[in-house]
Image 1: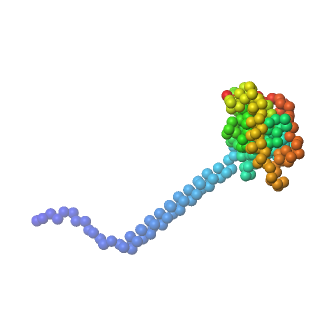
Image 2: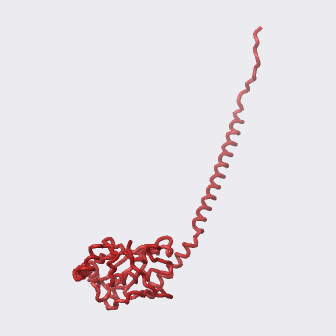
Image 3: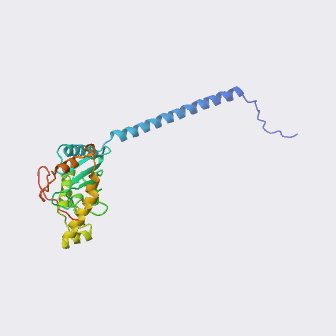
Length: 256
């Protein structure tokens, strides 16, 4: 007799039960996906809220400082100097300096770009001339060799200084160059050993780049400095004393 072994009965599949299990699985899967999406949305909202509401003390101090400085520059500008926001941005400014009387820059209007770093006033502003100028301490790209624009130990920037005092220092530098620490060695050599040639070239540059561009402008296009230039109010100021509010201190000029 043959051993038939263990026989396992096979029952026909319950189609109704399979469909029911499939529906339950799909329902549970949908609930899991919905729960995952909800949790993910909550996390995204928390991240967004944290990014919007979390403001560092440095950012608050910078914003408050810039607001005060811009208001001061607007209501009490230094003689021969104007400054304003570029395209409404508080960290991107433009300034204009009127060339001093009895200097080769007399009659010229010089525009500067001012970019304020994220850590301002703990870092100095970045300034450069947009108007070409023939000067031993200002190079062809408009960069300025000025101690107040650099951090110690090579520079003398400190948070008590501000945009107005630095612009005043640049105005004084235009009137009295420092040929011993130049950015342009050839111009410095002219200033020291052949000053008439330097003065003539500086006047020519002023006439070409800083005066001709201002001719023919209507009253609506005039900046505060242009109004002052037309009235002849931009006289030279004595070098060595800066208007810092509570103290007057000369800002040295070095370029290393």
